[in-house]
Image (cartoon, rainbow, N blue to C red):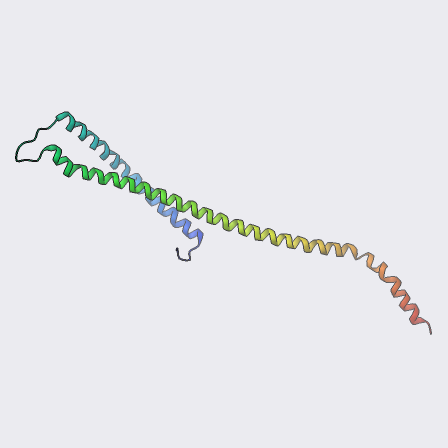
Length: 153
């Protein structure tokens, strides 16, 4: 679980990490693709050369299998790892955006509920104010009758 960090701060950090990852990937992609191309070239040349084994010495194929191909595989692994990290960063940002959108939707729902309550109160107040002018005409006969009865001896 992530520590209590604001969504904005998480988004800033995720964006910074994504930019850093993109810069590393961009800087290394040329070298990695050049290594892959060079590996294909070496394989083609070895096939064309058809090297013969000399007794007492490792063959050229053995040498490339033990020394060159592990380096090529390391580069391919690096490229794959970069792709995985980029995909994970993308997923994280997508999840974070969904989280932020959900919070905004909840806030909007609370705001609408508050506005609905306020509108109901305003309607009741308006109805009360509209009914107020008829109030004196309803009370006046009662007031007159009270005054009349008090005026009698």
